[in-house]
Image 1: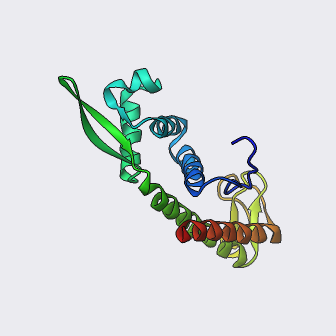
Image 2 (image 1 turned 90 degrees about the vertical axis):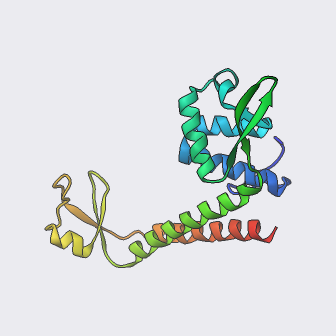
Image 3 (image 1 turned 135 degrees about the vertical axis):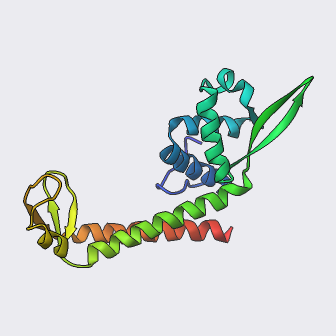
Length: 185
């Protein structure tokens, strides 16, 4: 695996399942944090994770793990189940690999929508930025505030950054390509 070249969105020579897992790991880490990523990794390596044994296996507090697993369950990434272990019944969480594809596509589509809204905002007209807090305002908002930032009273400066629009269009195109690749397979 170390000989593969990465290109930000997929890995050359890897399978689609490998790519989906890599993308899912990154989304989970950025959305739910490192503990969620740790739980996801454990689930990838094992058939299930028992709530009663989380502390021993993953070194995460049970309540924290349960909250994260519930969030992942809401996304259909994991499913709750019960397993009999001798005389006791364990409450377990299983990885739902078939749902990873839908999870990733939904997240990518949400991200695309946000980028499109940001691109529209950038293209609507003149934008003013506060040099202190870096907040951005359309000309109407800047005018209404007397060209002063309402948060720290610094002067708003006109910014015209065609690179931002170009970068946003490139990101949207990359997301479209990833979605298309996933949906085709």
